[in-house]
Structures are given as C-alpha cells and as structure tokens.
Length: 403
Image (cartoon, rainbow, N blue to C red; front, top):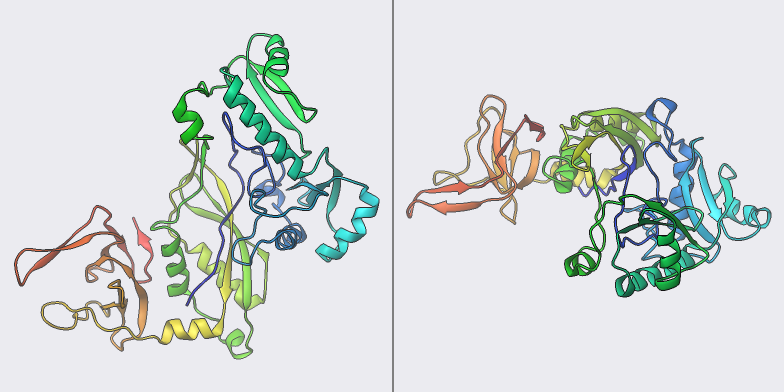
C-alpha cells in the first residue's frame, strides 16, 4: 500500500539565513522566527480553518495533494499575492497588494470561507524575488563586507551590514545597491564569512542552521511503519469510509513524540487509528538549530484507502532462502523477500507482518531482530556468505526501531 504524506515543519524551530540567501520566504508561509506566527503548544497551535485555508491557497497556486506548501520559486504566483503566515491568533493571515475590501470576496470564494485575515503588503512576492535577485547580483560584483539578508512577509527585505555606524549603509546605497524595498540595519557582527570567497558564493548560496527531525530509517521507513501497523477500523471499512486524516505532533529535543493532535479529521474511527499510529512512532533524531537539539512541531497526513490496504495486507511474498531452503519460523515469524531483494517478515500462515524494506535482516530473537537498510552480501566461499553493513539497528515485531 502506498501511503502518500508530506511532513511539514510548523513551528518550534527558528530559521536564520546568512549571506546571499534568497528572500523569497521559506517554503511554508515566509520568514518566521521562534514564537512568531503560530500559537504555542499550550495555546492550541494552528486551528483547523487556518490549515484548511493554507492548503486551499497552496492548491490554487499549483501544489499537489502529496506536498502542500507554497514554493515561491516554482509557482506562478498572482500579482496580488505578497505572503501568508499563521498569526498569533492561530488564523491564516494573507498579505496582498491592492484593496482588501475588493479582494476579500474573491478570496472568500477561492478559499471557501471567511475565517482568515487580510493585510496590505508593500509589493508582490514576484517583485520581492526580482529585487532580491538584483541585490544578490550587485553584492557578488561590488561588495566585500559582511552582511545578512532576510525577506519579510510585507514584501520588504532586511539587509544587515556589519559596521560601527550608519556610514556603512550610505556607502552600500551609493556603491552597491539601493531600492525602496530594502530596510538597512547595522550590526557589530552579523556572523557571516566574506562573500567574495569563491566557495561561499558559488557553492553555498546560503547556510541553513536548522535541521528537521528525522524518522529512524528515513521517510521510506516511516511509510513502511504506517503501512505495516495500520489496522483499518472494521466499522469504517464496512461502511466504505476512506480519506486523509491530518495530524500535528511535537518532536521533543529528546526525539520523543508528544502532543499528538488532529488538525483535520475524517471519521472518529479513522481519527482514533491515526492518533494511535503517530503516538506509537519510535524516537526520532531530533531537530536542531545551530547543532543544538530543539523542540519542533510537525504535521503529517495519513491516508486510509481500502484497496491499497487490502493489497498491502493480502500480498504474499516468497520465502527468503536460507541454508538451502525456505527460512525457518522463529518466534512466530520468518523472513520473506520481494523482487528487489528487500527482506521483510511474515507469520506462520504466510501473511505479511512487516513488508520487505531491509537490505539485511536476521531472524527474531527475544522479540527483536537485527536489520540494516544498507549493506552488502559477501561470501566466505562457494557455500557461505555474510552481511556487511555500517547501519545495523534492532526492530520489534511491528517493524518499529527500538533502542
């Protein structure tokens, strides 16, 4: 069963850009610093209408159902659009260029509801990106100092210049670049390298200090975990109830999953099962900011589809060959293999319990099995071989990574 999902960072991690990063905003609703935009976990985070409107706005700009987000560099954004963000009331706020009284009826029709806020932007996102491109080009050719840029949701661009007084600003305006959208500020140390060093300019256009939480084994392992552990509620199955449930959860700096909530439900039974699945996630590698672990809130849609569920759980895989025959049943499970040579586990009746996804996998012992996602099968001689991998870890009988 293929389970389509997109994991979105919502809040909890601040984002900082150095040097020549494009000021087109982040992929999800522009620049936001920690504590800004989305309400805290205790305040209830983003409410359902805000997320729904953001999804609809994303679809209008060209996003597909598997990756919701406004990609300012790859979408044909309208001339009236400046930026959007989740405000401190948990509502979606959209900055536009033009008359808000005239634009509101159109947006209410487009977003299928009135529960959003409008603000006035200085310019369209297209214009902000154009100015940023000109700024970047001028800095490459004419500037040797230290600086940092940051795009704002009103369309302006903050330019931080390193210096002792405002004279550095006037010099930059006269000799490098100036534009009404630029907002200049002086800082004693902006903490960036000289951008005339070739490796900085040509190979690393920006430095992103933030890393997202990482499911053990990666996204494929997350898909497999959801698929392997999903138990389609009988009542929902019989009544042909299908669809997506969108959840939000907090990945603590310890890697533990906490505060799992429904952002958009489908059916009480499906909602409960989705909550159970995400609440049972194994410990993540936590998100970081400047290498320090931080709490990060994420969101994930879980898809319930009967046909895919039936296909996944009724499919039979051939047995993994071991010792000149089919693998032995150990602790109720034996190994199976797919056409790509990936290894999984089935019960004594041949029913798939953990779908094939491992490159190397040993039988279960004391409730756990040693597996690896990468590795090589090497031979001692013509009859004997062994696995070699640097990525061994243990799983339980649900396929969940264990410490």
